[in-house]
Picture (cartoon, one colour):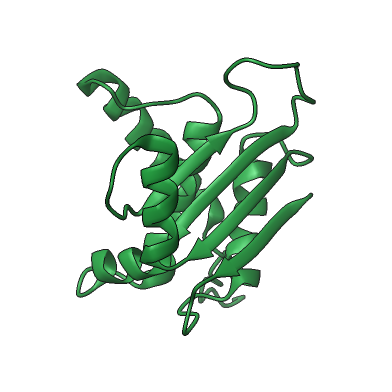
Amino acid sequence: MPVHVQTRGLRRRSVAPSEVRRRAERMLAAIRRPQAELSLLLCDDATIHALNRDYRGKDRPTDVLAFAMQEGEGPALHPDLLGDVVISLETARRQAAGRCAIVHEVTFLLAHGLLHLLGYDHRDEDERRVMMALTDGLVAAASPRRRLGISRG
């Protein structure tokens, strides 16, 4: 399962790239695309700000960007080549503060970005509801299995 994770501009890593890769692999397995190729960039606000400005015309940082390889003009690419998801760990840390662990916020952002790569969007309320339900399912699929405290009788 080719999931590639890189980091850029981070002074400290609040989430291990290997953990993000494992969660992405679980998401791909859950959508029955275990051989799909996905690239992830975990970065700082300055990096995502520049990408958001240059590619979306929005001059501010954001939490997640998705660059789908299956959209737009150009030659058809292999269907398992999904694209790139960029996550700002600085923004994720702020959004998670006092609400959840940063790894959970990053998992949520990863699921959201992956769904964009698959063609989902949230332009209206119906699309938003569908995307949130799918995001919740991917987050659940990505989370490590917890051992249940069941003893044999």
